[in-house]
Amino acid sequence: MNSLNVFELRQYTVHPGQRDVLIDLFDREFVETQEEAGIRVIGQFRDEDDPDRFVWIRGFPDMNARREALTAFYIHGAAWRTHRSAAGATMLDTDNVLLLRPARSESGFTLSSARPALDADTLPNSRVTLTIYHPAISREDFAAFFEQHVKPMMAETAAPPVAYLSTEPAPNTYPALPVRTDENVFVWLAVFADSDHRRDHERQLAQPNGSQRQVLSDLTHRLNAPPQHLRLAPTARSQLR
Image (tube, rainbow, N blue to C red; front, side, top):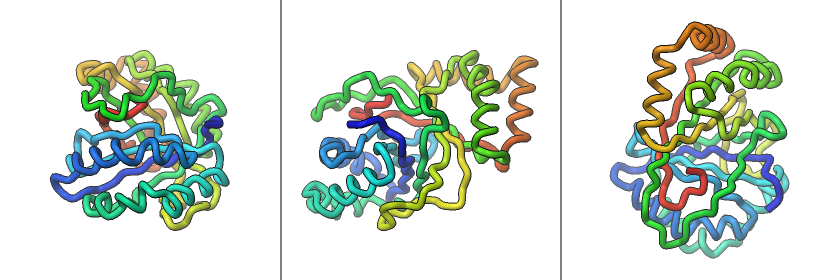
């Protein structure tokens, strides 16, 4: 697949007790079939702080390719036609979707590891934190501040960003699937070896040194709202892990 320049961050609210049902169906039926249609499935996750939230990310080369791939999967694809009712029965809301692009040309996802096989059922020890900022300044200025100050601080605290993205402003090329519009967001992700590794990072940020305290203060003044942190556990077949 060509390089990925458009991403969807999708947060689904599911019926109580139905998240694992959806994940089993998704990992079995909706990974390879989406990729055959031209969609890159980047990662699937359980939200560790909300038992009724399933989070996943997919990517596309560009907005036109997104329209074509989604049409191929949802309109013409046998997998969605066969399993859409079963998937839909698990879900309460699927409209919490952010449309994103790399904040810099080199800041998208680099997925070097192979995806686990179709019959994989072992959950990885790794954990992912996904942070959503709502900048109060321009995309370009915020990306520069992030790279100059926040990114080095996160690397110091054992959380180097693996990707950082900003709002894709282009119109939604597949309106049958809504996205959150009129928002300016900046999203970054870090991967941790395990929960202890992530807790150590969180502990360092909770007790910052002088320079880190200054960066956190400067960050606060550049945001319209407090950051949202999603603490995620990859599924057995998530490639991002």
